[in-house]
Image (cartoon, rainbow, N blue to C red; front, side, top):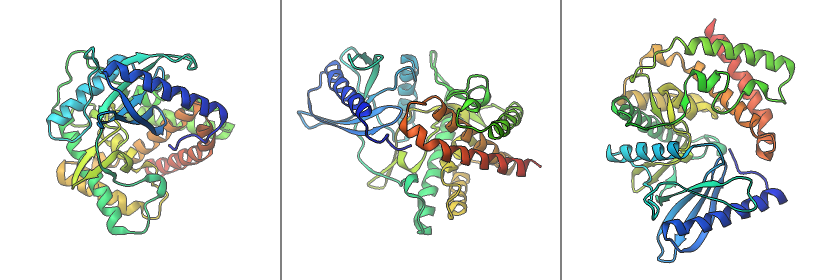
Length: 342
């Protein structure tokens, strides 16, 4: 998702978020030399340079998206991944030894949670928004890295025991197609036509029935990144580093694969990217064909989440602009699933 186009209200909100971010640095005993916005989507993420020239990533979270317990659990899982040899950012504890600090700004409608991570150098593996391009060797390289990295993460999830008090959202049947999906009641999106709504409601029922049949053992279901796209993999000196665990939660491992592939399905080189990802994944971790056959199911479920995303942000310029494309992609996912389900 790209950042919202500039407008006076958005500019004022961005300025307020930046002021809040600077205000929050005092809780870590940091003195800012500069702070610059990296992206503003679910969270506002800043590059923070301190007066002693240390670099950090500072996140101002969307109000009400995660509880403090859920953010602390994100820290716990990332720490476990780091200890297992998977390169991820590390958190900086505040002066009160907490991961998250909540602070307010007079111009914002709710207090905001803030956390700070040590800066990770590296170049993005790629960009979905720019498309796959025509370089087959590069496409294979990028999606092989994604497949291998994802398999390593899933292997860790199969053996990792969640500690007491650990809490994260779930990309399970309830979180995807239940009465209150994690990203919103997608079938109520106002811009759906009556016929489109009817098709999506029917597809939701089919997905719910199928998901209820799938196993949720540790071999199939566990902690997943849920946004392992090229933008969230950094390469530095040949080392692979994962970032942006904001969507991480419990889910089927195949949902992770579906997420990585979702926005490139209409690209002429999609087949090449998909084959590279799956082949690299299978070199590291077993993925039986009978399980892989459910990929269209999870691509459809993923499409629902993006409709929910725009449905719950009617005031967002970005959501308004993306809605037509996301509806079209969802209807295409319905058609593809219907075809393989025959």
